[in-house]
Amino acid sequence: MYRKPILVLSVMAAVVLGAAGCGAGGGTTDTINMSLNTDPATFDPALAKGGDDFTVARLLFDTVVRKDAGNTLAGGIASSWTAEDAAHYTLTIRGGLSCSDGSPITPTVVAASLTRFAAKETSSSGRTLALGGATATFTPDDKAGTVKAELSAPWSDFLTGLTLPQAGIVCPAGLKDTKGLAAGKVAGAFSGPYSLTASQPAVSYQLSLREGYAAWPKFAKPLTGVAAKQVTLAPITDYATIATQLLAGSLDIGTISDENVARFDGNKAFSTSVASNTTTYLLFNERPGTVFADKPELRTAVAQAIDAKAFSDIISGKRGSTTLSVGSAKLACVNTDKSLLVAQDPAAAAKKLTGVRFRVVGTTLLQGGNDYIAEALRNAGATVTVDSLDNANWATLTTAGGKDWDINVQGDNNQLGVLTSSLLRVMGPATEDGGRNKTGSLNKEGYGFVTKAMSEIDRNAQCSALQSAQKSFLERVDAIPLSTLPATTVAAAGFDIRTFDDYLDPATLRIVK
Image (tube, rainbow, N blue to C red; front, side, top):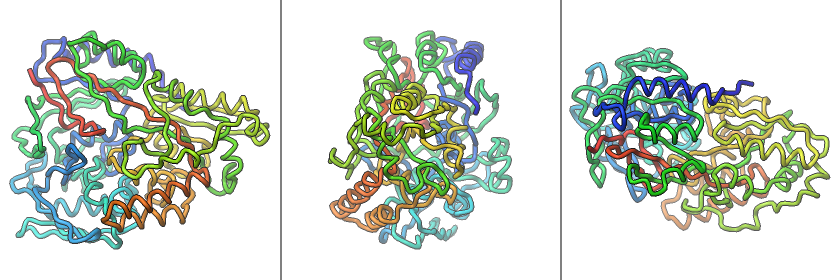
């Protein structure tokens, strides 16, 4: 399997950034240089699967609503919205908005894009988050300026689901050429503030502010400063390199998730914000014919071999915290019962794991943690191979639905800030069927509790059902909770980016000098 050459990639990015100049050190005042973790796998928002896909999608495509502080929503392409119940919604579309080719963004345009996003055959990773197992019908009324959404089954997270980058509105030119859309080569596809104007994989991506763009969302606390005319995104996998380039002035904004954050302690030339919406946990491939299919005792043995605290310390430089579910402790309705987790017991693990062969996969961003998991299993007698892949290849492998991996070290960026987002990784429709579940095991009992929760409006009723859903997957050992991975976004003086609760919004990039 492919392993990214971390240092070579970082040096290449450094050369490009140094040549381009930046607001912090290069003298350019209308450009923001920001790091990515790796190359985007696609520029089609509906097909986005990894964090870097989400970043570019947010900059290139607007959504009908956006996340705001305090788990509230702000208007995006929609100026207002109403919910008749958990299955019927009306979106009022702002007038005067246009695509990157100048064509108007009408209710018909919005409905066509959302229909594609919601279609099972599109296989968007965000579909299940926004709809659960329901289907959706979007009916535009250009005269009234509205789009009515009707779900075949209730899903109370629907509006929050429409904030996802995957639900970004693709303009007609992009829908006519989806292959070109995915490659970023349809100039008229974009509905967001930026257009993609240059693309050099493994080096940099150039985004240019659309002339006359005026569709900025109406956040409760207005954004300050001005939008950059140019945004350069550079793939840099190594956190140490990101920190070095920030300090050298070659980067204006970068995100770091390890001990390199300490290099900015007390440095007034930078501001920092922390988000802990990324959690980590082990997922098992339970598809028929795999080593873990119908083997809860084997999954239990893996859990007995793992020390979540040791894993947390390795991946976060002792900045993270262990978790009791697939979501962080900040999420509403998250499990707090430690007794539901399998206790560490290396001796018991060895009785089941000795001689068993496992293939462990994970992203390069968690490479130290991936190696720890492999070594812990080897210490229990298992034979283990481990592959740390770049985000794009890792996401493709673990969502394909095949048998090419056994244990996935999942880094889960919970964009919605709701527990269902992470629960759907371990139950419900499988990824190969258009869902988010990477295990391939439906878990009808657990998913039944999730769908019950999404039909409820009362928070207590929701939490009761979600507690039962968590108990189900923990008792089945479909996943092993590990820890949070705090991500610290570092911005040089004169630059800003907004974090809403635990969600970093790339489209809020601003120059504030």
